[in-house]
Image (cartoon, rainbow, N blue to C red; front, side, top):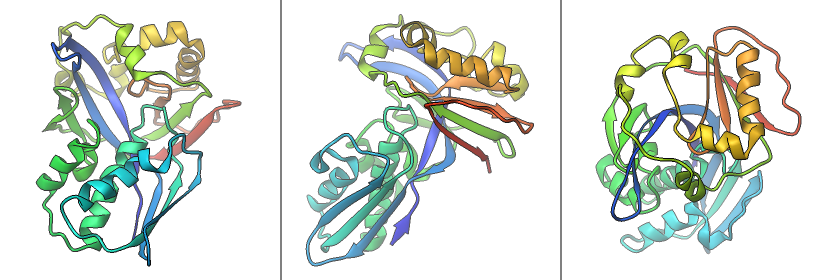
Amino acid sequence: MLCFPNAKINIGLHVLRRRDDGYHEIETIFYPVPLRDALEVVPAETFAFHAFGLPLNVATEDNLVWKALKLLEQRYFIPPLEICLRKCIPDGAGLGGGSADAAFMLKLLNDFATLHLSDTELETLAARLGADCPFFIRNRPLLASGTGNVFEPVDLSLKGYTLWIVKPDVSVSTKEAYSWIKPSIPPVSLRELVSQPVSGWKDTLTNDFEVSVYRRCPVIGQIKEQLYAGGALYAAMSGSGSSVYGLFDTETDLQFPGCFVWKGVLD
C-alpha cells in the first residue's frame, strides 16, 4: 500500500501567550500543499524500515513513522511489514514533513490492518505523536489555536496560485524561536485577515517569528525579499522556519543557489 504525505504551510502565525506549563498558545492557519513524500508498506516476514531521498537526521526508533507503528502496536495486532519512506520534504523547514509522515502512517496502517478507526480516533492517536500531526488526518485548510492542536474549519482556497518554497541550508530551533519573541494578542483575528484578497496580505498578515529569526538568520529574510522582488503577491516564513514560501499569479524565473527549491500549482 502506497500513500503520499504532503507538506503544509502556515498562513499567518500569532503567538498569543505563554502558558503556565511552558507551552505557547498560538493562532495560525495550516494549509496543505502538494510537496509530497512517498510512504509504502508491504507484507514481510519481519518488521523493517528503509528511508531514501533527503537525509533523515534521527535514528529509526526516533522517526515519527516508526513511532506511529509502535503506537498502534500497543493497542492492535499489526502484521509484519516492510516500510519504505522516500523523503522529499526537507526537515527543519516549518513544513510539517515529519508530522505528515506520522499521520499518513496511521491512516495507512488503519487500512493495511483493517482497524476501522474513525478520523476522530486517528486524530486522538496522532496528537500523541506531535502537535501538528492531527491536522494531516483530515488534511484540509484549518484555523489552529491552543498549542496548535485545536482546529476549526476555515473558508480559504488558494487554488490556481503558483507556490514557491525555498529553504536555505540553515536550521532554526523551534524552542529558541519561541524564546526570542514576546507573545501578544493581535488587534485583528487571523480569520478576518485571510478573508481579504491575497494581494492585500502583504501589509496585514504576519508571522510573529519572522522579525527575530531574520535578525539571527539574515538569509531567510533575504529569500522573502527576493520572492517579493520576483513578483510574489504574498511571501512569508512557514512556522518557525527555515523555509519561506511565496504565492504568485504569474510565471517567474528565480534562482536560489544552495537552497532547496520547490515550485507547484495549488489545487
